[in-house]
Length: 371
Image (cartoon, rainbow, N blue to C red; front, side, top):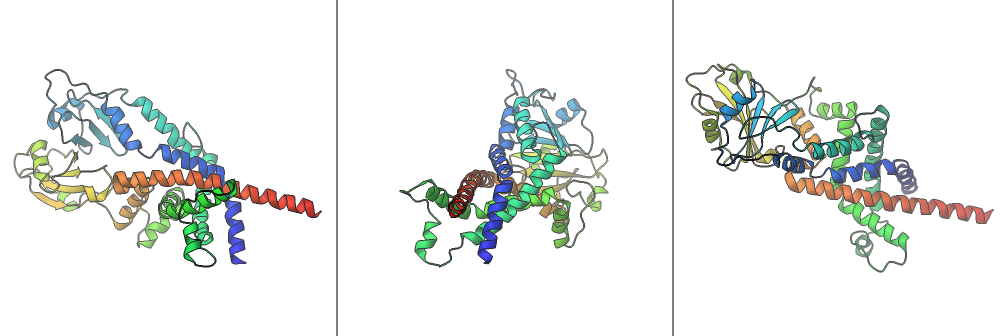
């Protein structure tokens, strides 16, 4: 009886939310490597003049008129893409002139903007109330589909032959229904964990109550505003004790803690500040195992603290939810797994709806025959 109730709930939810889940899955596949493609498209606009030497960090700051609090993002190899960030906004800079790379990657950015809007709001232009509500509700139903699907996947009698039938793709199946059944069960099993993470984190980002539950589980309240943790008051109040080192020297000093770094983000300090925050990254910018957040003494280059600005447990969990949803939290491999899981979800929706509709049509024919 329980299995029957779960089955019909699973089928109904799949038919109701299937089209929207399919849309989210297709757009999820397209967004798999968005960050890498965007970086490549923007960096293509850099043209090195003959014999030119890339500007120093100080020269770039002077050329852009950057102010304290903004972050200067520098590549390890001179001549790579430089960015000036403030909050969530960023400006791409030419490393040889310090000027903004106007129009760099605009076409690619517009494409991903449209795909993201479709993924999040069922719109190519931006947020829509109805579209956002439909996507959020479909994602919540998708979570129920993942959980109920696991229950329905479990064989009624545990034998290796029955389990194996739902673990591997089979050849020589007699018809499309048998093929869809096999594909649905096999992909449902192998994509279960990444899909559960993707859908659950999507719920956390969609609903305020889910976000609050995440913080409450860690004994915290949802913080007001956005942003990462800040440098502690001890370092923020530190006064400059001598002539400040140049940014290149500070990066050399910081490199002792992360010798494999590929990009560095320096939070531009106030004139008399004695400490500076430097983030060195050897990955994609969000994978914590490949990132070191340091606070250095501006006059000596001494590392005062490492990983001192990561925020509370709740903020770290929320950051995990944000970037586990795309797989970026686990680097390139995580993105690939998330993309493959989204691809599997496309097949799951297609085969699930095909199986469900066939069943309903068969029941309708039987009922007509009985009449």
